[in-house]
Image 1 (cartoon, one colour):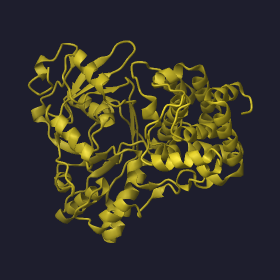
Image 2 (cartoon, helix red, strand yellow):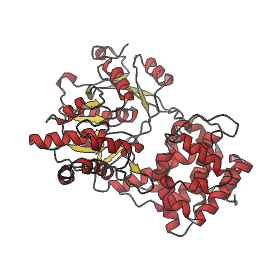
Image 3 (cartoon, rainbow, N blue to C red):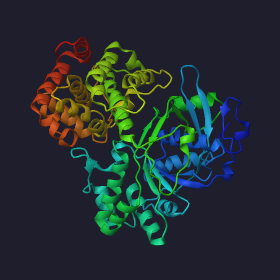
Image 4 (tube, rainbow, N blue to C red):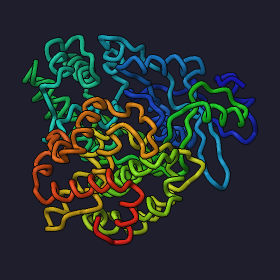
Length: 491
């Protein structure tokens, strides 16, 4: 059955569908970056709230600023902006159709339609999932980079912005001119202090063309921090076939794990939906939840990813079934990550790690190792390097985290240990491959990437441990090196 509003009453009995009248919904949120994670996370929470009969003036309008967003818009428009969400549970998969999104703005080069939509008084929140690398942060300094070509271009033509932040700024300017209250800007990306990072991007961009507007945004616009969590694989033929098994023809279904979490700072001057009624945590301690998740979960993904990739392992659950990779993860987490994670309210960090182990091991997710290896140049500085620095600050050399970095370097050399070619898997793949190949003879060439490692790459103790690890991987292979590390032997 092709997914549509008309098809909803006739969906198979086992498929949940909206219990509310979608025609009664009105928009309150514009979301930029309608990918799988957003549709499995924020959109699901809103669907739950609407099913309670509440918050019907908080429906979503989708938006995007890239060519790929136009493809998503077309796919969703053909099915009335409905999405099939399939929870992958070893005890039995469950499907639901969500209807929280009621429109999708036309994707334009100058973002005129998006700016107009965000200027509408009914819009009180603009949320984003534009990936960790989409915030124009200089990895070496950890702060907004106003010299990035995209930002420089928007600074020169603020009335015709190409970036999401330029469009947000133009809409805020229009609202100020009209005497309207500004909307809240809410990042839903995996970034430490994502609200602060988003604020820096919007205010920093404004300073290039209109310092007075920058001051107004800084004083009047809320940018709450948030922690989001749900493992959501990419959609391919397998996922489309899963939807079909539930009797649904969906061009862009989403699969995800059963677990989800959303922790948000309660700073919404223009109002917000009552999401605490459907499991969202509102707290002043987002940074604690965020540190736990980024260090233990996202860092854990990186730890299993490159070892798995080099050993030609396809899926995350298969990596977790490999005793050496599981042992590698366990030892690093126990000795080098968890001891440096600040306490989290009502949470036992060891229990949280056990939950992460179980989530990574879920065979139904079929989360690919290649997806976990993606975009290391943006993810390593956020998920791995901070834990590495914390160990150094306390006088210990984290051999496991440095080994993880050496495995990333070896992966970026472009072949697995079987000799298979690794297809480009990073926006900076060509540079990384060239540098990784140089590092085979000169390991410091890798650590010299200041945009990744900053001062940490110049630490003699790090350089010595990295050289030892990388040389061991090249000379003896990933499996032998992991055996030594898990057994507690020198590399």
